Amino acid sequence: MNPQSGSKAILEWQGYKLVGASAGAKGCHWLRERLLTGKGCYKSQFYGIQSHRCLQMTPAVNICNCQCLFCWRFHGMRDYPTGKQEDPAELMDKLIEAQKEIVSGFGGDKRCDRAMWQEAREPKHVAISLSGEPTLYPGLSALIAECSKRGMTTFLVTNGTNPKALESLDPLPTQLYVTMAAPNREVFERLCLPRGQGLWDRFNETIALLPSLDTRKVIRHTLVKGWNLGWEGEYAKMIAKAEPDFVEAKAYMFVGDSRNRMTIDNMPSIEEVRTFSDRLANEISYSIEDEHKDSRVVLMSKGTRKRELCQ
Picture (cartoon, rainbow, N blue to C red):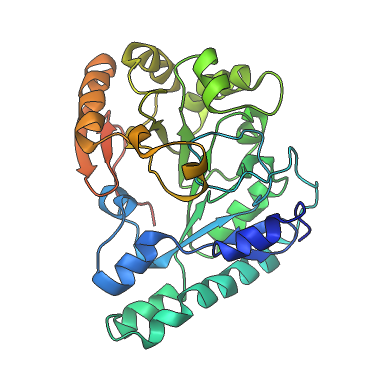
């Protein structure tokens, strides 16, 4: 990997395991919590994943076309991918080895169940997010296919600005997350800082595309107080076009590199997330199904798909 000057050292200091030309893995807070306390993340509560067996990775660790102010990632990113598509089997082997390194230290901790630790060394779920915009990686379809071949579920998280990549995915991920971080062009350009022309228009192309994609789909609102909290009517119009199976309203969290761009006052309380969710659910005729208080996230559903993972 040859990321921009200085960013490799920063990423490694932040706990990233960098592999291949542009990929990386990193253990999340809930991986640690699951191994040491038994608590699971909101994806475990909402959708049934096993938090200790989730590989949080990205094929585009240093590549993104936005610089969202709320993003906890380091903003030393290139605009476009190198175009190098790696062998997906070799890449997954490297990522799984990286995951084994990430969890290695827990094996000797008396608080960690030994059987659970052994399972953590064999990830079952792949969260394709972490850093960068994964749809800018040219080998994304092959990577998802390799995960499926290994019996692993895939959660793809995208900012929705690359509709052509989503349209050409074959196979589709187990679950597709599209972040809806702005109710209009003005907020999008101020909050998400697009690094190119026409990204708001492309995002709306993705919204129009979503009903045709036959997989489980989630619209996620990352809510930043003072920036994009509110506008329930505007969000509702876009959700009506997208027809997602689920909608998540999640508070921005004052963590990571975002602390250099935001303040703790920009982090909504769970009560504020609930208020937003109640208003939005009424606008879109979805029902509120669940919440994860620690993560400050509320789940809404239109009842078209089961919440359990397809194994």
